[in-house]
Image (cartoon, rainbow, N blue to C red):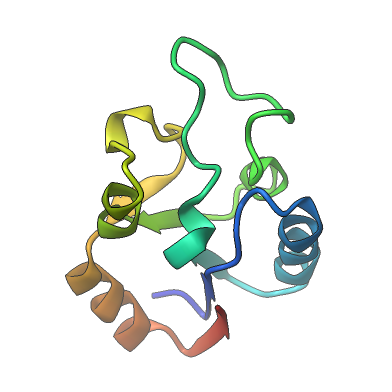
Length: 111
């Protein structure tokens, strides 16, 4: 169970929003982030490339060891495939999203 579950739907290409997200969750106890809607933009690593600050908008969250999930259906709806998503970010389905929301003590929506 997660104490604070953050639902994030702002574009991963907006560096100001992703930086604000990283700063916000830093102060939260037992936090996890679920990327959905446009939040999945920026998850795809360049084919054959490693993750760097330049190609990973959620790098700050990854460095903080905050669990990050993304909605598989939202990546697929935008033409992505899960095999190209940064390996440290896990996929979940809408059904699993409902389970995570139900189990969380508090849900914070940043959609």
